[in-house]
Length: 145
Image 1: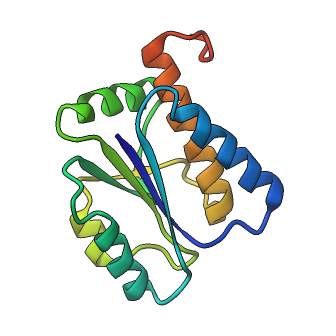
Image 2: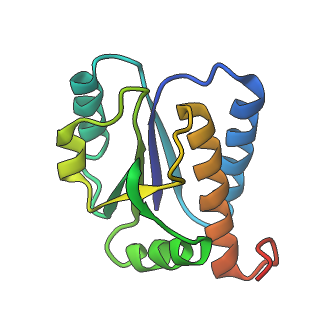
């Protein structure tokens, strides 16, 4: 099971379509759930995120530029290891970041880059990387080593 929780509607239609394409591709390899949280205060967003995680038993990853960067192969191995404990959930905050409540709930903090991205670009990049990770495990040839 892979769960992605993100704040904010996608205003860029091209990026929204790209995300939806990767979401449907991921579903060929694993159960996938996407939860979109409405923009609000950082604490209200956190409460909604925690509610979305209420019955989730797997590992939770907060996405933040301060986090540890992973290679695509390492992410693939993480996803496979997390299957044993219930799956992986990834949380992307708003422009104001993530509440301390979310950082405390997370098992780890991951960075896509030391640079800052809009939540729309972060969502698209993460969606592609999750798909890539699943194809690495499945050895489809999408990822060239």
